[in-house]
Length: 530
Image 1 (cartoon, rainbow, N blue to C red):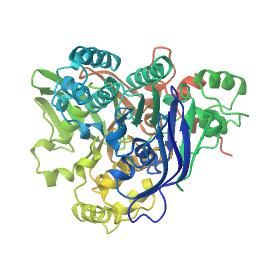
Image 2 (tube, one colour):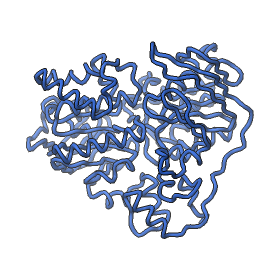
Image 3 (spheres, helix red, strand yellow):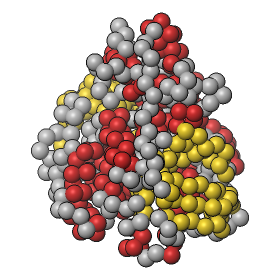
Image 4 (spheres, rainbow, N blue to C red):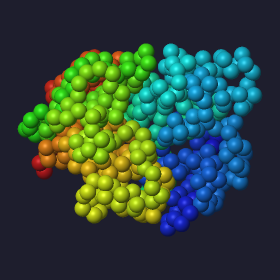
């Protein structure tokens, strides 16, 4: 259905090819996973399949791109748009309409679909993505996860034969992500839709895909069966990493199989998670409400946190996580209640004074990038934070390695952009660090580094509060988990209680589901000293 043959691509002024003699082939009805390191070239490969490389990105390309048996190697992206639906990493940047309904109808209007058929397709796509109740809502009023579902629904409604999606579940809660991936899988099986998905949280779909494409840092690409490809892949979820840790003879791709194997392995007594002693209270929020017109996003939430504590806030899309973080930061809309950060109300501080008290990494990290080069962003960050020269650069390298400082920040991958903004905010040395979906677009290795940075901040007496759907990251980093539903706190537990195995617990980590041991939620608890 779609293939690349001997395809090579280099960005303008790039020293090495980003894609090097790529040969991949995806048949009609297949469900294919694309994985690789953060910034390794996954998005570039998807854009090559769509035709955006090199026509939109610039650079030079050679080789052949075939779609449904037709050679589109020299064609413009719109020439194959009737065959391919594409959802990029930041779909909200591609919206053209005001409301959900208008956004879904737009593509159908361009394809000259009749009105009755248009209404039918829109209704089906809205129902499939759980958006029926939001059909008349403004796109700007939706959460990041809801916006992502709108972009996917728009691609589905247009009826293309091929769906190419870049990190489609990165802003979705676990239940919504599972539902979406199973829906796409069923489309492949029942309607011969071909789906190609780049995803870092590969545990969500390794049991569904027909093949796995691995993009290596040297630009080479391989394609093969899931078990074969992932056995030697470095950036794997706990489910696969456990096979290596426990020295199992083969990689298992399902929780149930791993649980059966673990039950026979009789491991040593698991370790307890070590938590830091906490200092004095630094965050106090009482009866906080956030309203958007008639919609109450945060409903009388009260919470407190101490120095050295890492709190994860979780909940379904639209449950109020982002609104609560911005209220704590001081520039969000707080309609009622009181907030104190290190003894001060951040909403009453000037933006400069606020940075010394509380800092925020937003869900859309690129919103904070405005200079023409990476090097200038890093230098500006040092100056604003009044920190030592290269302080921001050193933090950034922890996450993304060395990157050409001349590159434009908008040309970084989404994961690299997030790493840059994270470094910029951490350089400010505020008492409280807030992060909204800090692992969006990051591979497993980089997530471990981010978790270590958060633990290091806590060890220095900082208070860290982050919103996340990433259960495995929460297991690695948090001390405490607060769960929101419809703007209210419905649970507030230690991370061990929140993520341990229980049939009714949708937040159970992979390790908890495999081991079924009380309080065991992360791989480091199973690792032996040798």
